[in-house]
Image (cartoon, rainbow, N blue to C red; front, top):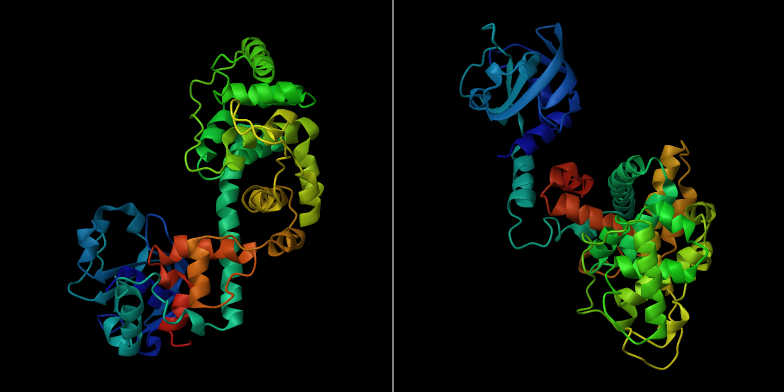
Length: 427
């Protein structure tokens, strides 16, 4: 038995509450199970129950056994002084408040149908060697239920990301342009160089970036220099000009890159080399002053493709590194790469901006991400294996990542709509 299951039984009244009586045989009527508390303190706040026709309003605490009250030392904690009802699976002793008054106790074990317990055990407690607990039943969920839940968890994911963005906003003095700069630079590093590029972004005062937005050479020298890519001596005109410019800017703005994580090349395709991505990023910013303002006005995926149509500077059209030359070809941001920027940076930022400005219309934002192909990763592939075409857009793939990471991996079936449907026998 797990306390989570008891929380579920109480919250959704999944027991024979018509026969509910306290352990001292007092009649119990449940008017309001209260608000589920996931932090410290009693498990449910502001519940309302009638005990022998006397209305009680207060908190509810839930344990496997009554004696857990003392095991957890609640009798010494003032947070539990307002507990009006103690819910337990098994009543093994009488519980008292600090003033020695008895706390009414409801024992659930006699009131729960064995079938519910069997379904719970089968789903949650027998998940060994399963990718997800409900993998044998995942294909049985109706489209309405699944889509409704995926919408819920997708917005949960956006909410989680918006917390980080709000913290960045606060640190920047509410500068949306600066926040976009840092988020974008991190995501230009993709998985391997994300931390490196983020550390780079944190070492440059955004005001310095804004002063050089119209100069591609100065923008590249700033970014390449802070990334530690200009530390050698080379007889190469382009490299020399970058290094000289960086040395001047470093002294002028007192730049320090000692905390920057060195970018990695290992296991990267040449087009994803850090110098290629940093050049594309520098060109993007040297061509687009007030980039955040432009991003916010984009109404479609195609608008964003046009805005992020950024290439490397001319030197990198014939080089993968400063010393490795190849035939001339343009290296522009691909649509698939821009899709990742939209998914991981633009949409979360737009969502946070809508919240901050009091705009509740998310239809434009949703239309953009629903028109982007789903991401390719093992999580999406496995869900599509369990149920054909579960993910048909990036909207779905992001929701499935949230579902897997925050519910399936944490065995949180009782907090998942799909899990509760199975336990209730509605699937």
